[in-house]
Each structure stands twice: as structure tokens, then as C-alpha cells.
Amino acid sequence: MSDSLLRRKSIVPDQPDGRGLARTLGWPHLVALGVGAIVGTGILTLIGVGADKAGPAVILSFAIAGLICACAALAYAEMATMIPASGSAYTYSYVVIGEIIAWVVGWSLILEYSLVVSAVAVGWSGYAAPLLEAWAGFPMALMQGPELGGIVNLPAIAIIAAVAGMLLVGTRESATVNAILVLVKIAALAVFVAVALPAFDAANLEPFSPYGFAKHMGPDGVERGVMAAAAIIFFAFYGFDAIATAAEEAKNPDRDLKIGIVGSMLACVAIYIAVAVAAVGAIAYTRFANSPEPLALILRELGSPLAAQYLAVSAVVALPTVILAFFYGQSRIFFTMARDGLLPASLARLSARGTPVRITIFTAIVVAILAGFIPLGELAALANAGTLAAFTAVSICMLIMRRRAPQAPRTFRAPLPWLVGGIAVFGCIYLFFSLPVQTQIWFGIWNMAGLAAYFLYARRHAVAD
Image (cartoon, rainbow, N blue to C red):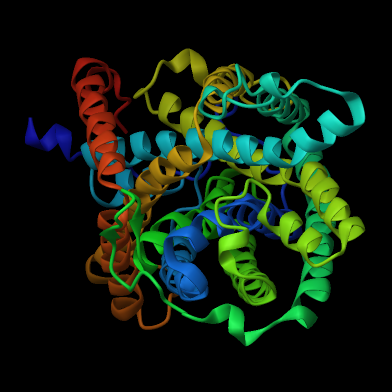
């Protein structure tokens, strides 16, 4: 039994006809996919949640989360060029460690990607709802979930349906639209920095760290501290892992994957630090903490309503790039696990255009239900738990392969692998335990259910090499 639990798959990047995805993506598509996934709800909405937990020291929270993500990105880049197959952390774990660990990682990725798509859709709705109410008189009760006194978040459900439709049309077409929308989003953030940075006042940074460094429970029952904020803001940095799920659709994976992963991560770290400094320095953090549209609120407070409206409209137009990137990744994780027999094989059927139609529709239904009724903060925290598990697994896989096969071909090698891998592994573990306790409990429950599914179904149906 232990042998079957730890059986490993062979590295088979190219699948037989009818089972492999079409190779249609170049490195510009992958960089845009990464930037589109990374720059989104995290900086546009979660900066308010982070400021509530850490005060002005949210800038430090961004730096810590960015460092850990950068190290994980280097590990991803090395593994993606060694194993250029669809499935991301799930596939790497299956090849390097074994089936049951791969299942746990894949199960965690399903949680991550489903919740990220849902969370970003809710964040998008936070910007879209005021515009819909002002321009079309749409009732707020149908644009907010029950936690805000509404009935259902219809805009969040609608944007998920729209993105699902794009993916059903085709991968390359979706990636081209994504690249255009990414430029719109970057332009909006540039306008924010241009307006907010001249208003920078050092007095707004005092006291810099009102809640301390380590996570602790505040008197109001909210967990606060720099690391508590970093554990949530971590959501703002990941997205490069969605590029790894595209390995099987990259035209030249040896070259394109490393450019996409490392390039998108470096670009986004620079963007985030600039936006965070401008935001916290422009007005007191208490004025935008926990706002569903903090950057637009800051611009209005600075007396720039037109810039605020431009940012809000740009967010409505461009935030779907994040939904597209993670929706894409989620469908590919589902597809790869189904192709391996761990999920029903019927879900792995491809359309004539080489896209997994059934799994895309199934994914849309699941994430639309979550987005319609669950609050943004809870979605982001639980999504982070799944991501931290996946990042830890990939970093461990990189270190195992450095010891097991040091001379194996690698078109990208992470520098200082033991330091980089160590920061990624222990940083992710520390951030996990900095998440709210209820999030850790729910993550444990999710994985207990996953193990039950593995032993009842997946283990018996797995397709052995």
C-alpha cells in the first residue's frame, strides 16, 4: 500500500493526440498572464484590509510577502523548465514525491484557485456596484452578499460567467484580450501613484507599526500585526503559479516559462511597493482601512474625483484579467487531475479547439456560487492557505531534485537554491500560522475531506504510467 501511495509519475510533457492541450502561447502571453493574475484585487482592495491589521507598517507586510513569493517564484521557474507539463505544483509533486502528496497539493490548488476566482469577482463587484447603482439604478441588494445585508452578489456571478465564455472560445484568444486589459490596469495604477505620491506626508506613517510585528488578537477580536497583514496580503502577490499551469500550452516552454514567471514577479513587486507607499503616505490609514475600494477612496479624499472614477472604471474593465488567469489555472488543474484518473475522466475531454469545455463549465458553477454569497476577506484568507501549501511543496520539490538529480537538464537554475528554498518553505509555513485560526481549521477540514475522496475514489482510479 505504501508503494502505491508514493508511486511517482514519469515526466511526460507531450501527451498523445486527443489528450494534450494545444501549444498556442508565447512568452508575451505568459508575462501578461502573470502580471494580469498578480496585479489585481490584492492591491486594489486588500491594501485596506492589510492597513487595518498593520497600520502604515502594511508597507513592511508587502515587502515580507513579496520576498517569500519571489523565492517561491524562483523555485517554480526551475521546476517548470524541468517538468514542462500542465498541472503546476500538483504535477511536480506527483513526479518528485508521490501520488498521495500530489493529491493533497492538487486538492489544495483546487481550493486556492476556486477561492481566488471568487474573491477577485467579489473585489471586482466592490468597484462595479457603485457605478451600476449611479449609472443604471441597479439595487444594492442584488450587488452584495448576505454579509453586507444584500441577497446575492449578481455582478460577481456575471463576471465569472463572462470570463468562462472567453475561455470556451479559446486559450490564445483569451490571452490576447488579457494582454490588452493588463495595459489598462497598469495605466490606472500609474495614474494613482502620480496623483497620490505628491500628497505624501510622513506624519501619516506615525505610529508606523501600531499593532506590532507578530500576529496577535486585538481587543476588538481582530487578529492584527505585520505578519497577520502579510498572511492576507500574500494573496496580492501570487499569480505567477498560474503561468506554470500553462506549461503544456507554451510554444517554447524551456524559454517562455522562466521569462513569464520571473519577469511577471519582478514587474509586480516594483508596482506594489510604489502603490503601497503612495497610498499609506497620502492619507491616514484609518480613513481607507477595510474599504472595498481603498485606492479610489484615497483619490476622492485627495480631491481628485475624476481620477477616482477613472481608477474605478479601469478596475471594472481590467480586474477580469485576474479572474481569467486563475480561472484558466483552475480549469487546467482539474483537467490534469482528471486525465490522471484522480477525478472523473469525462472531465478531461477537449473540444475541437483543444479547450477543456466540461471542466470550464463545472468550475464556473462552483466559483459563481462562492462569489455570490461569501465575504471577500474570508475567501482571501482560505485561498492563501491552499497557496501556501502549494508553494511549500514546489520549493521542497526543487530541493529534492537538487539532491536527487543535480546534473539533470535545467534551462533555469534558481540562485542559492538552499537559501532561496529555505526562505520559501519556512516563510510559507510561518505565514500559514499567521492566518486566522478559523482559516487553519477550515483548511484542515478541507484536506480531511480530500483524503476521504482520495481513498474512496482517486486511488482506485489513478492511471499508472
